[in-house]
Image (cartoon, rainbow, N blue to C red; front, side, top):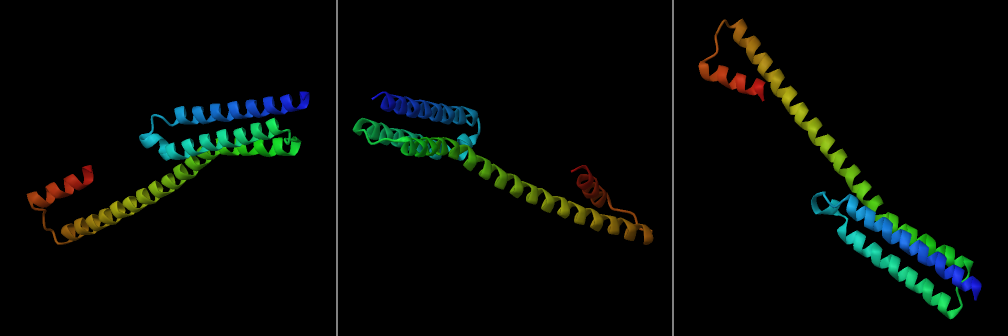
Length: 145
């Protein structure tokens, strides 16, 4: 009886810690657009934590809970509580890689345009032909962004 109570208390503590961690994760991503994109995952993991804990409490009540089942239920509880943050970090890393690729493509485009303008200026100088006011204005707008 005493061992059963200890197992139940340990599972209750694990559940409380897991739900608290999920709450902190939700608070941490609250100000991001769409909650960091993990709102549904947070809800699913909270439900998983409660269901695993309910199953563990049911096994404790039936007297079939042993240390092996306790370790398994605690591991599942903590895995479910960490999953949303891991998913968020994976999504964030993919977003950053995509953003860096876009920035490199934009930089390559600007460098190519700059080289084109440089050749145009050199051609104008070699031909001893001045720019028209419209061409000068276009060049100025390009250089200032």
